[in-house]
Image 1 (tube, rainbow, N blue to C red):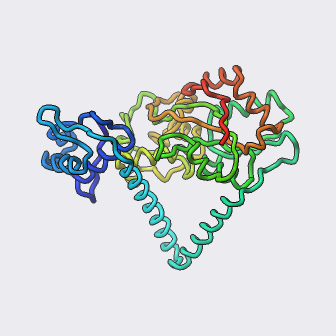
Image 2 (image 1 turned 135 degrees about the horizontal axis):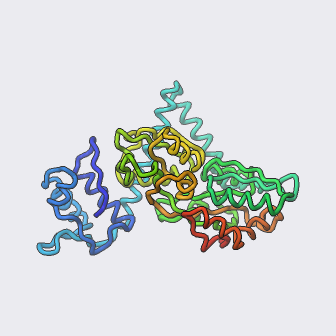
Image 3 (image 1 turned 180 degrees about the horizontal axis):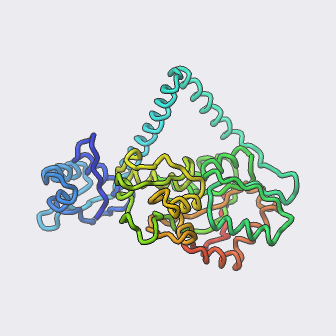
Length: 373
């Protein structure tokens, strides 16, 4: 059974069509899979059976499903990806429209907005053509890091300070995207990311290839980790999925824009047809997983998206949502530097892996593995 969520403002049968095509496009539904019978789905969604029947007829006309008298409605082919591309386009258009309306509301003219956009786009293209040189510290053991917050990463810093007291660590938790941008501009030598590429469903590598055109990178896996909903012990608000997060009695705490966790949330909300404005507290932002967990432990919020390890640290309940990979990224020519050499060796060590495993919700089977782009 797939998640289908209906919202006002668009014909219900079209919403069913779009969400079924999305599930086919991303592989959640495969050729040969059965859709729910018309009356069963209609009852679950609270709509007239004719609405579901109309959606199924349109899907059949589009060649997505086939209807058989005995077998029911069956997915007949894999989608060519058009649904996924269309949805990505609509999200981009919505994002640009929001930025435009916000600028107009602040009193800027359309011409001013267009001029600034053109300048920023030109600057971005120029940076892609002429990559910035990697940042170098004042001492050979200085390491500048920017990226997403992670509890295994905190463990790595603690191990580094104990084992290499001569090392100077400059750490900034700014989110995955901003960390990669700082690396691109040469402001840091190491970035941490867990960015989901919606088109491929994989982490980091497709995004790195698009951002760092013409640059060789070394990508080191820190760990794989579990993300999910953090709720109070005993789950007193009976929160079981993202559908419950949109209830009017639920207070949510979010992560900042540009963080991989925020991107993961938005990806799932979009798939489920849940608008951000339906979530009370969507604009309440925390910078780290521990801040999210602390807010829930203190009763300031009812739920947030975060790591199982953060839930364990604050004795919260955890509802699994996704498994993701956290990677460390550095320019390939920096890999052999003293500041990074000992750090990457440490990631592959048994002592570090044991410490991370003790946090809960981590898999270190691939920790320390390197890929060059």
